[in-house]
Amino acid sequence: MQVHIITIFPEMFTSVLEAGVVGRARTAGLADIQVHNLRDFTHDRHKSVDDSPYGGNPGMVMRPGPLFEAVESLSLPSESPVILLSPQGRTFTQADAERLATQSVVTLLCGRYEGVDERVSQKLATAEVSIGDYVLTGGELPALVIVDALVRLLPGVVGHGEEATQDDTFTSGLVQHPQYTRPADFRRMTVPEVLLSGDHASVARWRRHQALRRTLERRPDLLERAVLSPADLEELARLGWKPRL
Image 1 (cartoon, rainbow, N blue to C red):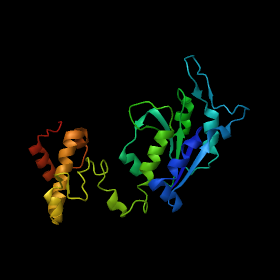
Image 2 (cartoon, rainbow, N blue to C red):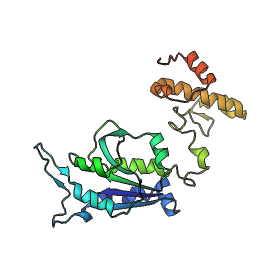
Image 3 (cartoon, helix red, strand yellow):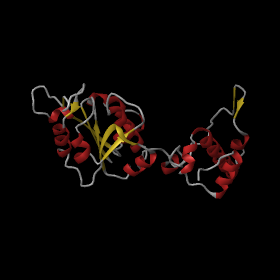
Image 4 (cartoon, rainbow, N blue to C red):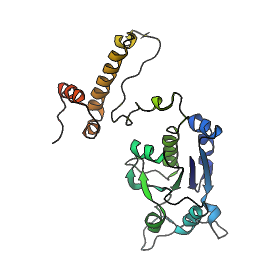
């Protein structure tokens, strides 16, 4: 996968993209992440990328010219996703990450200031995405979040392959079950016996029960769109869940 990030603060990405899973993926040649300085596509001596908004209001708006030129310089494949990071966008989900991870090239536009000229979202970006219902100073941190979510899904990036990600929170449609490791007894807090039993079927049932219970307690909204078996529905009914009609 190739990811292009267009930003006025390329220095924000250097250390993060060299660390952890993303850094290893780049070193292994599994992910090619390129950061482009938007100011390289300006034509004035101040390298300005913003201007005051038409109609008044305080603050500055990012001009369309540099963003269009930056994207056009990449010679992207047709239908390649160009995503504008914006608090006005649709909330980014695990399903979005899984869909984008199948693309060969993804481009991320980092907004700043009071926003981006509307012509960018209308004619340049293929989607406008937010990572949550809050406002940040720019799109750089959301871009890093999306890169991390995508890269870990690429084949060969995470150890044990697909098994390591298929039971993640949101990937399975539920909040993940509790996890334990050594020691089995830590300060008189013990690991559930079923996990020490070696009975894989019992462990699987326990984990599914815990995932259902935890989802009901913490994120009941997920249950409305999760894929649930008849056994899951019976278990949830015992736990007191009443689906909306």
